[in-house]
Length: 284
Ligand SMILES: C[S@@+](CC[C@H](N)C(=O)[O-])C[C@H]1O[C@@H](n2cnc3c(N)ncnc32)[C@H](O)[C@@H]1O
Image 1 (cartoon, rainbow, N blue to C red):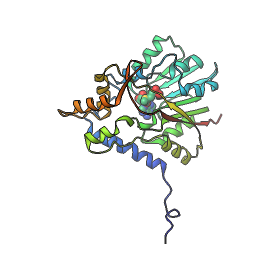
Image 2 (tube, rainbow, N blue to C red; image 1 turned 90 degrees about the horizontal axis):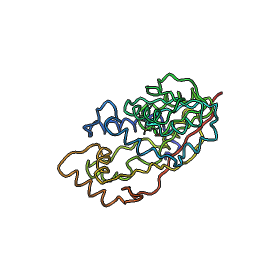
Image 3 (cartoon, rainbow, N blue to C red; image 1 turned 90 degrees about the vertical axis):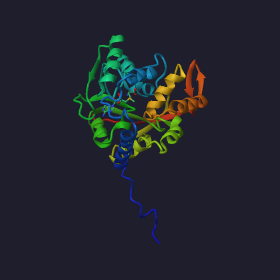
Image 4 (cartoon, protein in one colour; image 1 turned 45 degrees about the vertical axis):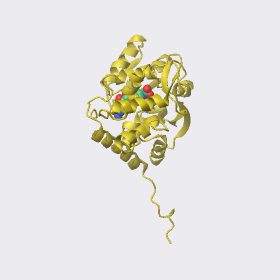
């Protein structure tokens, strides 16, 4: 009799990653009438992302993790910097921050953050990773970016190449749409294709011989809405913009049942979620 363990093929984590990203991409292409837009963050998405992630004065788990590594002489590279959630605190700690960001809508917000805070040590590079021309840095951070990247090997290899001291790549353990997965199934009659999560990233990194360390951090984006209409607008986009006479009411009823008002904002009543920070030393 065959031994099922002995004959099982080892998992190709790089291929598994590619399949996950492509399947999700294909689902978006098939279902979402907005999928083809050139900039995923255009419209009000970038501004909303900034509002949700900017929490002046509040602790940030990634910054807390890397703060001891940064001195006034340090150079930091932020890959997929978004609207500058980490660029702002990093610019106060380090000598120089290079922010790589391909989305024009995100860059507009990031430029505003840099201008409004009078930051003089931030360079913004309009490019995708890998491919951006940057100097190696003492610290390379990449927070909540890799979900969208089908070719994860060159992405991580390039981070490794420019890593002089420490690279830190952060990804959620749970799915982004965790609070509405059953609603997605109900509306489309199929499950939402999952994005790659932290355990997939760990498998990839080990397969590539990076043998990283892992720190678990809370995932604390406090998604809160002023009104139910605001919540419906974001949830509708996360549901891939379904249409139909009934959709608005179905989303409305679902949210009314599951959202609670806390600190003046409407929030999903979901248990705390976590992200993983994958980190490894550079070759300097
Ligand atoms: C969810 S946001 C995270 C932003 C920021 N790192 C944070 O944690 O607040 C993801 C960002 O990654 C950017 N991004 C997506 N693919 C990228 C790529 N291949 N190279 C660099 N940035 C990318 C997006 O434009 C977006 O700004």
